Length: 239
Ligand SMILES: NC(=O)c1ccc[n+]([C@@H]2O[C@H](COP(=O)([O-])OP(=O)(O)OC[C@H]3O[C@@H](n4cnc5c(N)ncnc54)[C@H](OP(=O)(O)O)[C@@H]3O)[C@@H](O)[C@H]2O)c1
Picture 1 (tube, rainbow, N blue to C red):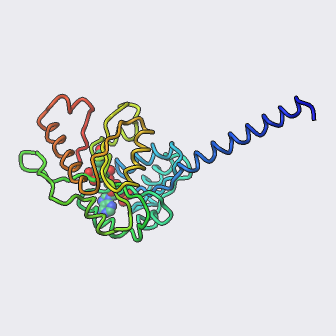
Picture 2 (picture 1 turned 45 degrees about the vertical axis):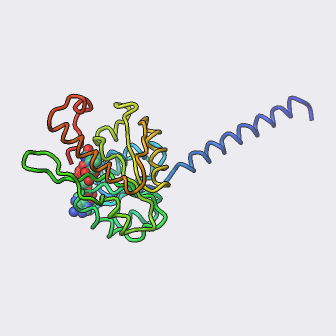
């Protein structure tokens, strides 16, 4: 074999190796995500995360409705919609993007979550007569969810970012995102939040999810009182 032939063969093998490494890198990050709830948060994260190589399965009370089907069409990749319980069956990651007060009922109805990563973005909604948040109860929603599915890995995050910035994270580069919970879930969230261009801060474990709920309530109160530094990012999550 002459030298130029050998060089050509080497180049072909190098290109093939690079292609297979790229394919592996993408496949290892491509999870199936059950997005439970198709409101502001579920649709924003579903649309953004599908563009990062993940497959989104929306879990909805009305999967066949016009609005949910329009959301599926607006989501990249092989997206679909089904019932909440069916959505989690093949999922690696579950997002509980539903109103705070129905969170426990929804998690209880999802079936076996063992081994899955479950993300809780829910925020306490108790508001006093003056429009200010009432401090949340001692146990966080995330801790309550964990009791219902002890074999799953839970973390609370994304609760203090407005949904518009979840769908368009490039509008707030470096925006600070906090997370607390079980290690595998914290790691998964840290990876995707970094990929979205946010700056991630790990507040602690499952017990510290209480702090993130209180942090949301404090930020919401500052916004209600008109503090400019809190207002600069547009609307705080109002729910
Ligand atoms: N909006 C924000 O900017 C923001 C930011 C951070 C965190 N959060 C928190 O994230 C969670 C979701 O917020 P969101 O703004 O997306 O709320 P949303 O727009 O009201 O949507 C919640 C979704 O949950 C499902 N749902 C509603 N009631 C339900 C029930 N009784 N049982 C089961 N599922 C029900 C619905 O989806 P289907 O109709 O398809 O079933 C609904 O679209 C809340 O806990 C909120 O505090 C919100």
